[in-house]
Length: 501
Image (cartoon, helix red, strand yellow):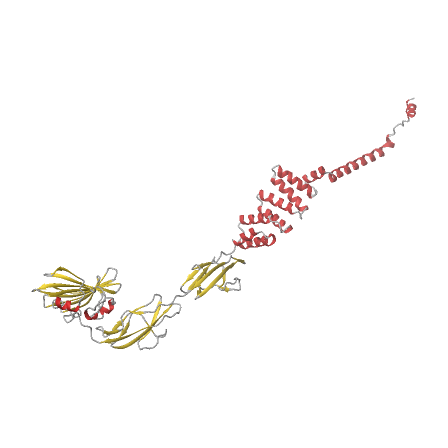
């Protein structure tokens, strides 16, 4: 009855033996479908790809880039670096990816791998500056040597034309060349010295042209003679040039002053050694050459050192001065006659014109000099008559005014032995005996004879002559004196006087 009902309903009675293969087939197909579904899910959905990537399975580069970004945003820098490395291994032509990887590696302290990543970025796009900037910083931090730094900076500048790289590059090259002395105008030849950093080679020009490594190589100081020179120089080291140094030097030599004889031309007595020394004022920085036979002097003539020594005879001295630059002065000449005997000491035969102290009267003076300007003092005892040339003192003895002093302040008249105000000190010294003694404590003794004739010269503590003095004893009771006041080696005043001892 039940079986019939089943049939009626269209059901079939189950037969276990007949249905087992069918069930197995259905299970296999279901499994395959599930596997296929999983594969499709893993392959064609972002969720699946992310899962594969997170499990270390192969996934597209974009998935790793995204996972790296998410890890970085979450503060997992190390994880981000791992994802970025996986991404870049699948996307190695991605410049921005290389920068992202390098930045992350650098932030976790893996500077060696970071530098490699930055260098990879440079190879991908050499015209962008980010990778160069980072590589340079890492190289500086690790103490890269100069040669390596120079190579990188050159590459950066060549590929980007960024002036900052060239500026930094120059710090690894030599410094600019230093000149000594400084540029300017000089009246003497200049020895120009150049200097720069150790190990650098200097190249220069002196004609204003641009220096190169084919220009003059600096070895020794450069001698600049007369003219205008624009000197330009560079230094070269590590295959780098320094900035250029350029200076202008104007060398204009002044006229060379002529040398001067310190003794006036004329007749002079030889010294005790039988010679007369003619001294010369040599212009500063010059050498004097001279002849004594009247021939023209040249640089082959005798060189002046410490006086020209002349024995008795007649000489025509000619001389020139030559400075260190080889320039020559005009010629100076003078004639000298040297006699053997010494000049006489100041003595009682000497007079002031025709005046002799304590001998010449007022009447004799008035006859010779008519233009009396003024008389001062007591004409009955001691008084002074004033003239344009100076003064004459009189002392009244036995009712007769006698000359006791004559003072001359200009060259209107001559004094003892023809000397005059305006003469050089040497001209005066040459008139009287001079034993050429040394200066001691500001005084030079010219002579001392029989303890009644004296001559001496006085000097300041700095060695400047102030006076020339002569004295002798008359009749054992009077001192007759002759004094020359000297300023700048020239006679500015004379006094001839007598006093009782």
